[in-house]
Length: 217
Image 1 (tube, rainbow, N blue to C red):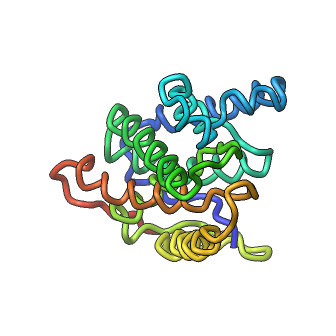
Image 2: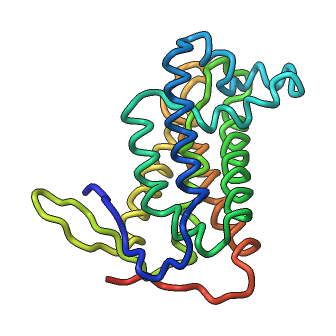
Image 3: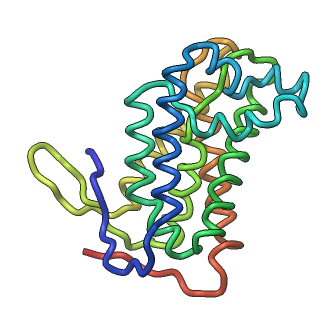
């Protein structure tokens, strides 16, 4: 089951911030490739290093959101941001969406930090912030449909199902990851879970007084 797009017929604005975020992530990834391991070590978020010197490592809270572990990691994150980010941005507005995205990313990082204190493994990726976007999408567009590639055909499927399966995977994987040692590396599942919860909660503050819209078709 591979999501490829949703219905944007009710969208009334051009998703400038979503486009900019995708461009920044891609650009930063190329810089990361050219900089190699030294760049990753310097600009990724390292829990133990941050706790030892929060002020000196402050910028990594943000730079790490725009770094990725490889092409598949980048492509998957940008696909989900492309599908779901534009609609959430349309509801929040450009400025609020920018703030919302960064806040979700920060909460995601600190959620992972809480379960990896003392770890020297670099944390990177936009997954936490994008998880927040998914949390907002579920709340704002509960009847939304996502076009999903299944086999050789494309079928519309409720966004709740597509995102719900992602949530279940992250939740159970996150429980399993708590038992791992801090230096094993792998996927920062707690960042995904923390970002999603942050997105869901923050939506009540950022969506204003308007009623939630629905996307169908």
